[in-house]
Image (cartoon, rainbow, N blue to C red):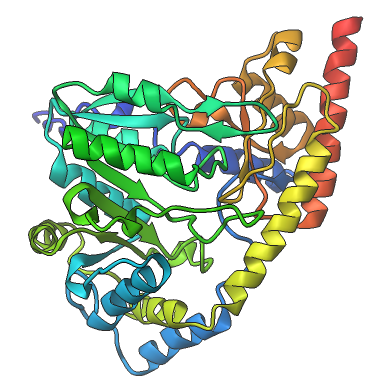
Length: 408
């Protein structure tokens, strides 16, 4: 009997890193299964349930048997609600026909990158970054150019390095990724930096992939400049956003991409061949989310701002931690380079030590490619005050124990 042929797949698939946050969450679950009390600052998911009025809208859709295929770019009322949200908030002029609803924000990212770039083209990714941007590029054979985000210290936090971005632009550069507010650093880029990026796009004829999924998580009344506020956004911007963070709808898998109308028509042809259409009843929930009431969102953001303040206070008590309280998203990204130098550990070794011995899940900065995350760790403060208090105390004890061993 002959041996059946091996199934073939693209050689790049095993090289994809995926989203390592899920691997560290799995480590925590293994410890919990062995009876340990595990505290997690890991995955970027609000711990607040989806607001009831959104859930009820989806239930009503199910009861009304709204369970079949929908239009590939999304039901008209959801595309209209998305356009209204962007226009009311950012003074834009988006038409519903310029909106494509996708299965999560990653669907929008894949659609944008795969449609605008070809093998051999270059994409500039400020790092550390959300893994989906460079990993999609790797899969498609697109050259990735990583430009470090600047850490200006515990007083000023993180900022784009505009000069480095300009230096990275070459003849094959076709796209710059700007995630604002930013994951994993919690940075909120100043409006003048967003204007500078837009000016670079105009001058160099480069497309901007603007991911603003954390646009409602802004603290200290800091100013926020959306790429949708530029009158010529259609010429340079592919805009992505979604429902997972703002409305605590991570499991609903609902995002969107905004592009000019003729491009939306072409991208819909690709979308129909990948996912046919978004989930029908989830889209009804999305309409309810955007139409309001918005009070649950506002209360969640106020709560997260208080948690951010507490986490910053607690982490500042830990030796070797340089802490900047985030201006956006719900992440904190302290630098621990001095501590690592003193203990002789790498970032990943330190994180593993904390998880395995003190049962607190945090993420290494190296989980956010390429190399700029070495010496940093990420905390999500989308968790309770109790977890923040106890988790920070455990980490403080771990660090003190480590430093005591070094002195022996």
